[in-house]
Length: 161
Figure 1 (cartoon, rainbow, N blue to C red):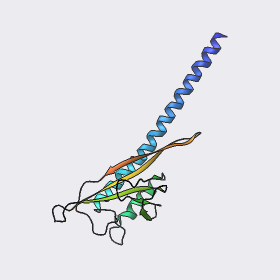
Figure 2 (figure 1 turned 180 degrees about the vertical axis):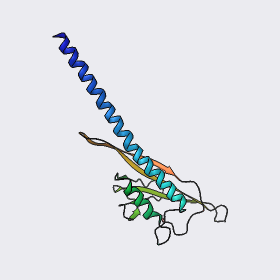
Figure 3 (figure 1 turned 90 degrees about the vertical axis):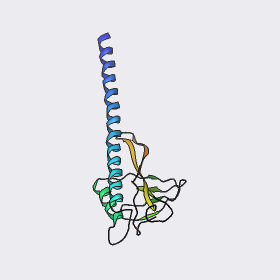
Figure 4 (figure 1 turned 135 degrees about the vertical axis):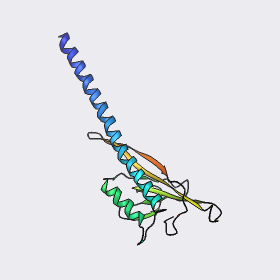
């Protein structure tokens, strides 16, 4: 009888470690997808010198296509306390000024600094993408934010702000 209870205890311990490993693996995979989406967004914003929505150099459309191709579907809230954040309502190009209580696919903020002279009018973008921690049995447990910032550049006149 003692051998049966020892085997049962070790079997339960093995199952516990398998569940912990599955949780960790799920967290890492979701974080990797969001981190890659963030890096792709930063690269596109820097390449097109801003988030633009027009016929030529439409970086907003390119960002949305990259996110769709990568299977990015996580939404989260953009807090608008720190400035003028814009949020993407969908991955079709609809953006609006971020509001409290509304879920967005990603958020961005254009920050301009300088006095307007040709060598001091620099712009950079802050972005937020979201990743979620969910398990197959328990569902979504939490949503986390990954922040990013582009390098400073001169900026495009047609950018969304």
